[in-house]
Image (cartoon, rainbow, N blue to C red):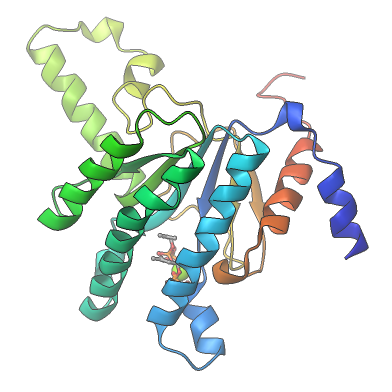
Length: 245
Ligand code: IPE
Ligand code: IPE
Ligand code: MG
């Protein structure tokens, strides 16, 4: 406890990670441990998320991307997928009231066409409602997969080349970035994954190229603002070299 408290006080607010990515994992195991259905874990996970966004925003972090549903998560039982989708719809609806009140800009990243009409409409509504806010930008990765994102970018750039909008010799890393969902946003500096798994699971493969990785055994619904602060302090004590010395 003392150690944690000390860490909180150690945060250097002038050198915060600009962009934090979070792979919110472990909802199912959290529920199982309590003899509850997986849906209860997802519900508790959504509650945990609200507190983390508030904390990140209060600290002054500019961008946060949270992995809510991957392009691979459709493999789960229909009942679980349906529950996750209803939870996400509620989250987007309520976010207009709760998080927008905190000045959060909400964006959904990922492929939208596979989502229900209702969710697609709500995404547009929530994005529109929060777009002029000036606080943290929260990207909700929803039906997101980094390979899909990169494939999509390649398709768009190829179409531009075919239509002579761009010459292939002008395709730079910047051009590729401008075709990603995170266009105009900084790279992820700090990547957090809960639940003890140490893998990327198709999350932001381009944007995490030089991210510092931070793993915890805690399951996502147990992840608290104090844990976020611990991760930030650890991040601030790492030596980042970006290939230099
Ligand atoms: C993360 O928790 C939430 C989503 C992937 C939607 P999980 O549902 O993956 O939980 P575990 O990994 O089975 O414990
Ligand atoms: C990653 O978690 C996706 C989200 C957190 C939304 P998974 O639970 O789907 O990842 P794997 O299957 O363990 O790699
Ligand atoms: Mg999981």
